[in-house]
Length: 89
Image (cartoon, rainbow, N blue to C red; front, top):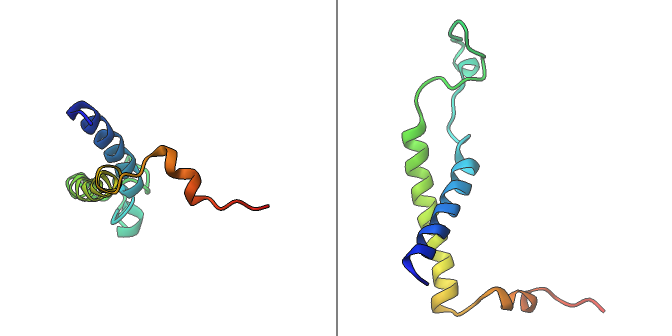
């Protein structure tokens, strides 16, 4: 796997994990009871993107590491998927 492929796969995993984990630990203005004039009550209370980016990076590294181990060390690939799905006759 070339470094461009590694970067592309990690980039895709990172964005998917970002949108999956973005709502975690989010406090809205409605939760805090202090709605700023001109904003909706579901808007975030304060900045939380740094924590979200750090959490996303750690989770993405874990997922990419597992994927790398499964493909390079164990040797599994796309062609091995039918082995995991049982046949029902």
